[in-house]
Image (cartoon, rainbow, N blue to C red; front, side, top):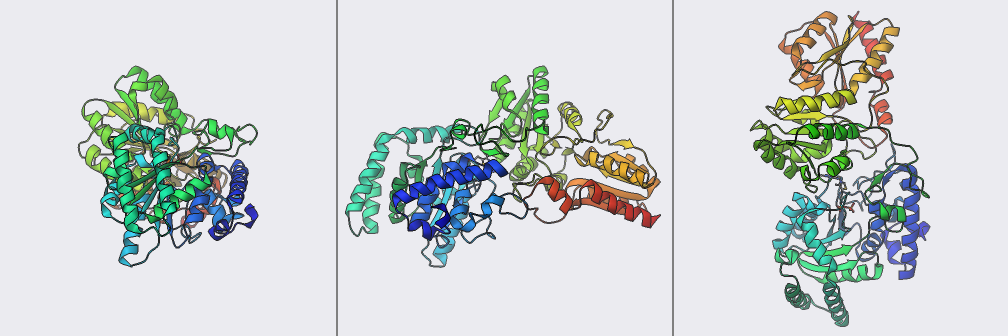
Length: 621
Ligand SMILES: Cc1ncc(C[n+]2csc(CCOP(=O)(O)OP(=O)(O)O)c2C)c(N)n1
């Protein structure tokens, strides 16, 4: 069946039985691809029937379907012309693991970060009305993404807008971990109320019986339905804020899904369709461990075991160190925006449940919550991925830095992250944090330094940013670090021909580069900057004056990071007759691919850096 499907038109031609067969084939195919390539598994297995029903009832790309986060669009991609390409999903040159407008017209908006879909859809619906067109606009949002502030802001606006917009709530009771918070509790009440299903069936039946149902009839019905519901549930949040609520409906029953979507097309104004799905559906191991299979590396389908065993990574080192610090200091708390496992906090949660706060996919709230705690003498540690820190920029400025509050902001997945691509690469954090007054910005060059920086930050009592990469430390070991002092870097190797100044994970690379240069007769000095802000002017100036050749290496964009800091230093100190070469990423969004591949392409690997420096230093001699 799957071989015949190249667009939603092909899905529309199938009967129910054929669609059910298609669903199973799609599941099997996704399982094979993800077990080979890695990727988002459980969420995709959960939306197979949902995606088939959407493609049956709506007309893509004329109708606009906006997937929130977009990690669950593999089924959509298979149906909409990218079945073969899926085999190369997330690989360099292959299709993306998220919706991309340049891949297909049916991907109507790029996503990757959570909770944006309702705003986008409402924008598209208003645009449609201004242009006097009549397409449907649909946002599909998970119950996890619904905990994000943006989603609630958009619901608030959409509810009273009277705009024709459909919000499909894909409720599987899971964010990456089990979903949390009051909205989850409220959804729990809706999930269990069989009455609604019955009353909705009732409505479905009567609307089906009326041959040419007019818009006013549906309006009356929805008013009637609302009054029944109000009797059973005192506070119908969605209806109270202006949505017509349909559901809940079994998200694995294609027929029921099609019926409810068809019904939603007849309702005027904003509609919310509550769909219940199971994360990992159809693959028992993922159903039982949906968090583990939210995003996975390649794995063995029979056992569910990873094909390559994961080594120790920065997040794990962070989590363990935090536990040992928290044992000694009962003021330390940890806050996560729905990323307990990814940021290494799972054990911390078990050890200190009352000092652990999973606050939903709400990075802005995470930071301001931390600011409030810090103001009252608590020491909040907030690990958030670099690209998601983008969300909380104003909170960092306005609530933390402006009041100089000692919040420790751990920027995980800083620099290249690889296969999740453009929306997830952590290229910008040094650039945007650097402009914020009062912030101290550090980056460890190995596990040991991360531990020391955490310890140091707790004593410092200032707002601190510590950025560290995805994955493990380099094979190139740094033998011994000096103790950490405020605003001080360290010289790891003395030399006289060129000063290589690096930060974070690139320090180990700088040492490798220096070793290779040595073989070519170039004596490089290697400086671990440690602090981007404040930078160690004294140490770096002295080194530059000695070598007159400067190289900077950083895992971030070329604007306003280490290279900019050093250029400014050279100008401010009026240092003359120096050569300068920066190794950083260009002013562009970096696509998906393995980190090592991307590093080679951007000439950030050891050999490329050696080649470039060798030419430059030789020329300047
Ligand atoms: C702003 C932001 N923070 C964190 C994430 C990481 N993240 C990706 S998916 C996800 C959970 C989404 O849960 P839900 O919306 O319920 O979708 P499901 O995977 O359960 O279908 C999270 C936290 C993100 N993509 N964007």
